[in-house]
Length: 408
Length: 145
Image (tube, rainbow over all chains, first blue to last red; front, side, top):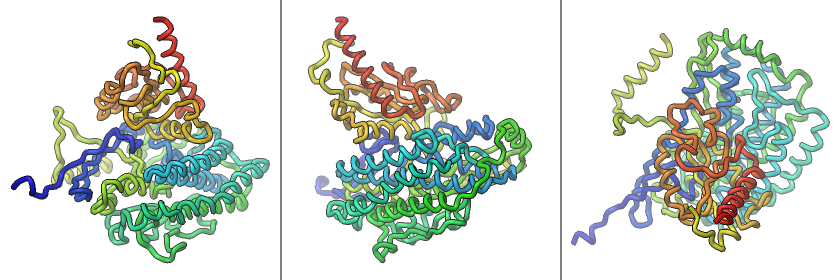
């Protein structure tokens, strides 16, 4: 009676799939409606950015780093700039530190509202997608007003920032921020009180605190599981040390931490509000002064050419901690550049989140970590058209070789 | 290539969006074009979930080695008559990734492209302009017959 034997079956999803805007491939092992196992395959968006970065000078790399991901187009070049400034010993002026906070928080608002729309779309609530994207356009208007661009901002400069905010720009900024404040309650009501949202997101895709810590979740994904990590507080950079804010975990609002998709919505919603407050605080406290340490690009490049050493640039991107390692050895181009984007840490938590859920929950659970594949992709080894697996010894050998290569 | 444009084709274009390794910048601008501020659905332009339903292929990104076969397959799955719009500089020329070892593109070396939309990323207005140009191109093709 082999027909009655209970077996699981495989469903491949992706890499090109209507529900996923980016190429990523999943292999689900399904038993009836339940997910038994998940495997994720990455590598479709590998564009050799780190490799290209070692062939360009640090200022050119800023624009390359901006194109790692279109949604985090501010935090990648900024983390790179933080690392390079540390190597070259460049002191960033106070005013630029506050301007950097304003742009970082503005990016967080854009990204979280975008995510809210995508989450609504994934559960089939398209009218909310349009509502949130209408709001997002206002945030993009403000971005365009401050930087001149909508998506890739081109605002970063090593040792400062490229555009100032003059006092005559303040009224328009406050007007835009007021729009978000007025509409915050409306959005909160839709996401947190609506029956459809509650039904689909409560108790779905649970990530416990232990698993979040064990699997190195970062950013809102970790905070929604009750782990208090936020690079903005843990390691003060820019002007965050002078600003008043705290970790956001779901118990701030509801008094309990479940680690489900609903909690991730709460965290992101409250972070939008927090970002608005941070922008206002920065505008108020911003001192007068220069906005860039060395305005002459040729002089700056000459200074960077002499820089020798290695450093890490960390900052809190909308999705979590972004981590850039840069090594320079006194030549025109960086000797080595390594990027670790937040999604890379947030992929493994998918496995406990998705296990035991239904097939229909895949999109909302996967979307709840706000994945960004362009940030994450890595090389797959292919030799004579056959991909091969690297075992532990081989990986260790390569790792040791790489360390030796970097530190001769 | 075209026998005759169908009636539905003249009234509304259905668009399929395919990412061939882009940075998301163009992709979010395409979605922004569909959302209330620009609202292209009022002209009948609609994003569909499968290439088999689409008249126009919006393709972003510089075509990485892993995705080249998939992009060709998506193109082959679309019914004739069809138009391809390449959105964004990296699909047109390679842009900042031009020297990368993992790229097969620009896109026009993989599949035939009808309209090039420039910008990194292009503004939604520019994307809408590109779709309108594809429309004009297909209509003139038909008029010549």
